[in-house]
Length: 306
Length: 327
Ligand SMILES: Nc1ncnc2c1ncn2[C@@H]1O[C@H](COP(=O)(O)OP(=O)(O)OP(=O)(O)O)[C@@H](O)[C@H]1O
Ligand SMILES: [Mg+2]
Image (cartoon, rainbow over all chains, first blue to last red; front, side, top):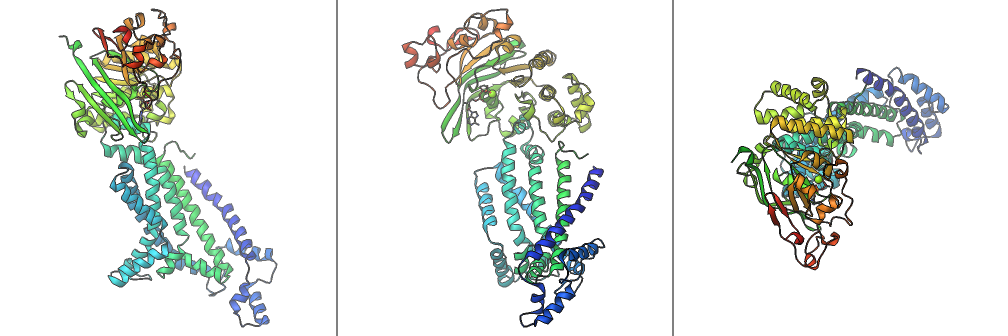
């Protein structure tokens, strides 16, 4: 098990190198000139040329990559072309916000999505099931920005209970995380429902009932434990996506997270910033995947890592 | 009346239907039967004739809806269909337990074998966790699983099909039930393993004084194990007889077909023939033919059979047949 973890961690190195390569060259294929963007519309060709040289963009592309890579191995992601601040510092400033939002959202999603899915699987085609499935449909199809705005209208403007945006207290976290969680709750609820229905129709569920176990025991101990494997997969994937930043939610609530940082950097063709942010995102994603895989082994004895 | 002669389970007029999108499926349609203490009752019939549904109806293991169970089922005088959920739950796995056909899918893959046996003991016998676990080990030893202490800690995927079925039997016997429904317990296993499992069940039955309702397609198994046989066709009982009677003198053309027309007593190889000798297939539960349900496949069909459904004719004690020819 321990060896497996080490092996997986070692494997992240080539993956990250691959990401950095792909990212580096794909970025440079984007239309638009970072020097031009930075210099502005009114700049003279000389000024643009000057900025280009400052950024090192006049050198051949493989040299640029070599420079980037040699800094990368020293954990130096360079300076933002836009703000001149070190990329690592900018990312460090945003990362906790993103992680906070993602953790709260995924916790809410598990707390509400899994029980809702179980209830509707256990009592299919009853009013409770219809309530859950239609709420889930609503949650999945509703645009995030619209839901966000509606929550702001109700809870910030009309009721004045919660701040409309920004960070600072736990109150600031509520609206953005609820907005972000709504889709994930719906997604997890649907997934849980279909998996539980499947598991509840398996032979071993009938065996469990034939032993005279209480229905709660049949559902939680016998069925849910089997259903957890696909549920963990979905939760892991969704958590990974949330860590990548939620551009729309961050925009609606003026939440300083990674998502908006990446979008702003792309608009400004701020190569170092984009590269840094996406590498960090890749690292987080790999880590979440590793934890997900380890969780499988906790739930399913048929999976062994050794 | 001897203790032996008291009925343990009586089923009267059992009707189990399923409300499906295609219509009402009458899976079991008016079944009567009695199970006595310590006996092995064979329940035979082709696939789809309602054997499993009968067993599941007794323990009310069918989801209602879509299933609907009518009739009367009494176990030691207790009306099982009248019990509340808690009441039937106390009977399941405790006084009546089940062994299922597919050892591969009937055990929970994420719980250890020991835990799956121990949990019902903890529940029904009020044993502590440790005592229940030790009992689980004892049960595994009793069903002749080598290294029971180690096996108790294993998950089902580590066991072979035969081992799993042994574990399943250990589970079914763990609370010392009075009655076991064994629903094709050996169909999924190799022939050699089949014989071992059947012998094991036979031995344990003696030891625990348990009654068994043995559901099977296999007349060889019936000849080996059962003392009395009930033959089902399309949701109904078509014949009942003590096992020797049935093999010597089958009265229903369906039973005769099952036995391959010429019953030979004492030659087990011949009796072991599977059920392929009857032309045609079992009618689907939605297309039950009028008149006698067997008439489209019956070699001795008469006009009356097409027009009217035969009633049961009682020929003696535990000897009845549903056929116009016997009436
Ligand atoms: N849940 C259900 N919904 C609808 N129909 C069902 C259901 N369960 C069983 N049936 C129908 O009831 C009939 C009897 O099924 P049952 O499983 O009792 O047959 P069986 O005699 O045990 O056959 P086999 O030997 O294949 O196990 C079949 O026609 C089947 O299609
Ligand atoms: Mg069956």
